[in-house]
Each structure stands twice: as structure tokens, then as C-alpha cells.
Length: 485
Image 1 (cartoon, rainbow, N blue to C red):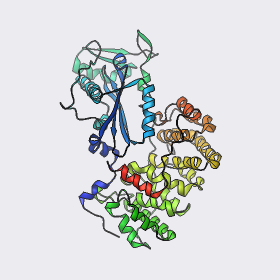
Image 2 (cartoon, rainbow, N blue to C red; image 1 turned 45 degrees about the horizontal axis):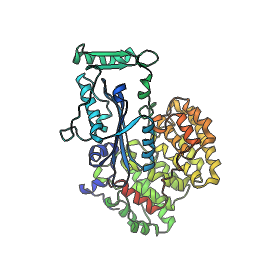
Image 3 (tube, rainbow, N blue to C red; image 1 turned 90 degrees about the vertical axis):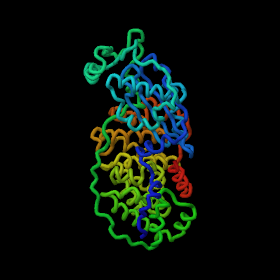
Image 4 (tube, rainbow, N blue to C red; image 1 turned 30 degrees about the vertical axis):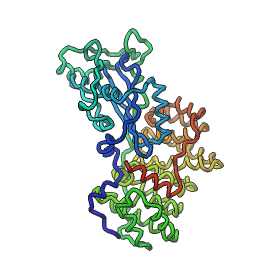
């Protein structure tokens, strides 16, 4: 097998983690549309949204919950490399939430102005701003300064839901401002002031774009011994797949050359390559300049020649690995790598996918991969819809009981799975979906509130959203596009 390259020049071909992408690449992207809440001045709090455009047509977006009266940036989150349909749905949601398009300069000044104003009171922006600040330009003189009004009646004005919440800020504010600020402790109804009885301050803080529920599943999987000696029937395969120049994608000529091999021989070699490299890196990740992408590329190729037994087992074993393993080898490409592969290999083994979905102690984003694959069966094989609906019904009933402990499923998996149910318009499962929401532990940031989910299922505004590509050449072309920026 070819030795791993130590050439630093090739290290850049490794898919970047979201954190590294934001820090190293986001500011190099073109700025897209920006939005701000229309009632920011009236209510003292609102949303600021900034988008960035990728060369391949995808969009990355950052959301900032801003309190211009006192606390500055209260919360943020981001979504990277969204397809058009995802971005359009977010824009539709934002428009329904009373936001309007603004210039980038306005968005920048609302965010950084609020940060600076809060810092006068000794209050720092939410910790997530350490990352999402990179979706903004640097706060320098290159961005024109706009004189927005912060505070109320010339003072910092703290609005708190309780004395306990107020106590988190008051000592710091007094140390920085003395008594030169005002405080409002909300009553039980959450009324903001006497002139606007209809406004509930908690509507913003509890909005599904910002609220999350419960912890992720704790990773506890103990792996078995893995293959330690690699013996292949087609030795050149290792050299090609471990070559750093092929780390993110294979070209059409190489794909065709590989798939021209006898399929059973190729299947055995791909399974061996994957498991050997899982064994090499499951406990100790290599240096970044040693990245070769073999696990991702071999998994994609295995979809073409694999079986529903040993090959599917190999893919599921990859998905049992640790969060660090997943971030290193797979990163943002999870659905591109696993959804088509699991569909092809597992479409007739839904029982095996169910067993995996119920396992305890697996990484959240690894666990999730089975659900869009199962949904593909309903989309591509409508005659099997009833079978898929019953599969999801069984899992929803299981999840409703298991969710509070977050051993087999957590709030993120629950929210993402519901998105797949919306996509296949699973109106047969509304009772089970409602029961899952009734746990209070579904991450609304993934799927929205139950009423919205119900409406989207019963009255869909979009056709089936199916961005899953099964053709192997198209899949690798998308991988090249995904990591070109």
C-alpha cells in the first residue's frame, strides 16, 4: 500500500470541519442577502441574518438573536452549505417572522453595535459568537459606521424573566455602570410594557430558530477488534484510494477503471480497505496532513458492488465510530456519502437499519443517517410506502419512550427525523409525531413546532425534496463541488 503523503500542500484537500470552515473560509465567500427584524427598535430585540454564497450554488447562513436594549448578542447559530430549497424555506420562515431585507452594512452595525453597547455594561456576547462572528466581516473602519440607537431613554435597559435571571447580570452591570441603568422584571404573563399587551417577550427567545432541547447522546460504543493486516486482491486499488489527490473525490476515468474490476473481488477489497482504515484511526486520529479520504470514497464505491449483508454491516460499523472520527473522515459530507449508500445496500434490510437506529451510545449525526435512507424507499418505490410508514411508526413509538434518557435517540435526531417525515408527507403518522412532540424534547431548531410540521405534511408547499443522487459519477462530482470552497 502506498505510503501516506507528508506533503503539506495536499493537506488542504481534507474536508474542513464546520469550525475550521467558518474561521478559514467564510469571510472569503460573497455576501448574499441579509435581514433584520422590522420591530427591532420597538421591542428592543430581534433577529439579524447574514448569508454567504458558495461558488457551487450553495448558501451558508448565520442567525443572530440581538438585544439592543442591554444584553447584545444573546444567541447565534449557523447552517452551512444549504441547497436552494433549504435556503428558500428558511427565507419563507423569516418573512413570516416579520423580518425585512437590509444591507450588509445595516446587519453588521446592528450586531457589532449591540456587542459594543453590552460590553459597556460588562456583558459579553453569547459564546457561539466566537464562531459565528466569522460570517461577518471584521469590525474595522472598512465597514461604514451607522449610528443606531441602543438602550432605552439613553440607558441600558435589562428585561429579565425573573429575579434569578436578573441576578446573573446585575452585579456586573452595577460594577460597570453604577446605578445608571434600568431593570424590568417580567410578571407571570411576560408582558413587555403597558403600551403593548399583546407582545410576549418569550416569543423571541423561545423561537424554534434559537431554542434547543436536551443533551446529545453520550458516545459510549466499545468497538471490537478490527482488521490489522490488509491483503487485497487488487493491490493498485489501495494506492489510488489512499492517494491524497483523490482525498475528496475520484475522477470519472478512475471510477470507471475501479468499477471494471470483477464486482465480488472489488466488494471484498473495499470492505477490507474500509475496516482496515477504521482500525487504524478509530482510537488515534492521524495528523491532518495524512488525510487520504479512503473511508468516504470506498464507502461510496461499495454502494455500487456491495451486498445487504457484509457490506451493509461494514457501513454501519463506520457509523458506530466516535464523533471525532466522524468529523475527521466524513465531516459535512455525511448525507452525500451515507444516504445513497444506505439506500442501495439497506433498502431490503430495513430490519437491520431499525436495529441500528435503536442502538445506544452512538454519535448523534451518525445515528441520523439511516432515516433519510429509509425515506428514500418511500420516495423512489411508492409501492413500498406502507412498509416505510410502518417502519417509522415503530421507531416513533420507540423514540417517544426512549427520548428522555437520550441513550438511543436525542432531541437533534428526533428533529431531523421529523424533517424526513415531512418530506414524505407522512400524514398517517401525525398522532405518533404529536406524541413525540409532547415529550417536550424535540429540537424545534431542526423541524419547527408541531403545528408547522402538521401543516407542511397536510398542505405541502413543495414537491418531494429529493437531492439524493444515486449515480456514482454524479455523487463524486457533488463531492468536488462541496469542497471546492
